[in-house]
Image (cartoon, rainbow, N blue to C red; front, side, top):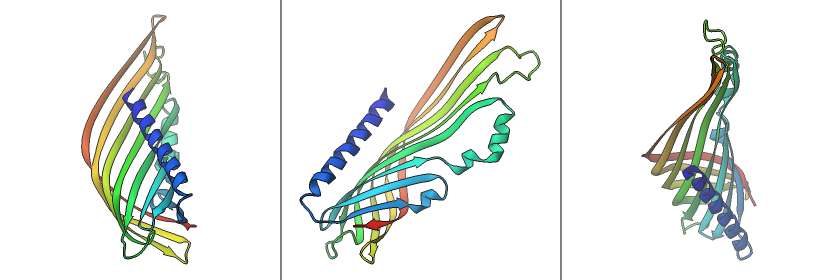
Length: 228
């Protein structure tokens, strides 16, 4: 329930920001920038960002990332999983970041140094399902019918970021967020469930543990994009 409420709040924030950006687009003849975090593409974080200038010296942006690490799809893992009757396994997640920027008033944005607050929501989950994992084990061939287990981690963070933005040739965008510092609230959940048949009687079982904690938040990224 808590995770559902958190996700709904994030969705509402994104919708509110998009509506605000659309409304302000009629009041300002400012620039729009679409971009992507090139660092994330190197390991499996596929990102798209949109920044909208609100005034000559301020902007708001929204960023979405789908996370699917390359190592989770390796042939070696596939070989290992095939030997233990793994029916399904996936490791993926997503991230949404909203931020507001104030540019240096000596040079109208989106050029030059900027500073501003950000809020982010990140989710990563691992899920696996095994079909009769003990069918090759002596004496246990009719014990477990299937086992499902998984781990998911979510975080909500607030912080302040510092960076610089260059527009080359009026359109090509290079945005370097040097560093973002803040605090993240993590929720770590582990779950386990399954069904077993013993003496022709079927049983089901499940278990779940949850841990929540705060950690300092750090972020950085380098994006390339197009301004128009």
